[in-house]
Every structure is written in C-alpha cells, then in structure tokens.
Image (cartoon, rainbow, N blue to C red):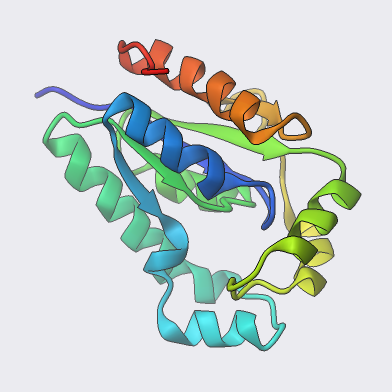
Length: 176
C-alpha cells in the first residue's frame, strides 16, 4: 500500500501557519486542512472568551485531525495541515496517524508574533493567550521529524522555503 507524506505546519497563534501552509498545498497540489476548522464549538467558545484549552479539550480535536491524515494516507495522498501542535504529546497523536508525518515549526521573536496578532482581524484567538501558548510550546525534539523556519522574513520568502522543503519530501516541484 502506498503512503503519503504529511506536513503539519506548527507553532503558536500568529506565526502564519495558514498563511504559509495553504499556499504551499496549492503550489504542490496537496490536500490542505486548517486544524482550527476541526475544533468543536465548545473549544472555539472557550478560546474566544480568553480561556486556554486543556489537554482534555484538545484530545477529540487531535484525534479528528489524525483521522483526516489517516484517511488521506490510506489513499496514498500527501497532505499539508496548519495546526498549533504545541506539545510533543499532541504531535505524537498526529504522528500515530501515518508512517510519515513531519512538522515545520514556524517561529520567531514573541514581540513580532504579538504585533502580527494585533493586526489580525476576524480570528477567535486573542493576543492575551499568546504568552500562555508560548509557555506551553515544546519545540521539536531531535528525534521528531521536521524543521524550524524563522517567520521574520516576508511571507512569500517563508512560503518559498517551506514549499522547497515539502516538495523535496513528496517528490514534486513547487509551481512559482
């Protein structure tokens, strides 16, 4: 059975996970999932009220994301997902979905991220939860497949670098 390669663009809110991952998926013709769309309404309401989610809140959400990866993997399709994946335990759930799940950790200085969050409109994650997310974040360990990308450069540069990484892994050339 053929398997796909699955990239999870991870990081705290405001790092541009969707801004980078969605164009990469389009350029490479890969299925895309926005993890925020998988949150049950209770989680969205909790975050909108400025309350951090617990591990218990996240478990069903992470399992639904893993099921999405598994579904595509069974068809031999590679995928791209934008998901915070802040803790190794969360990434372990996602990694359990398929043999080849990799992570691209989008990161930069917290003040840069905070400024971007202040400019963002129409998203349920308030800037006040950024420091909570940053303290929860467990960076990729040496034994976790993936890389960290600095998001300080302009978005198009970050998208281009990410597209090259994903293309090399899935065996296709990015469209420019």
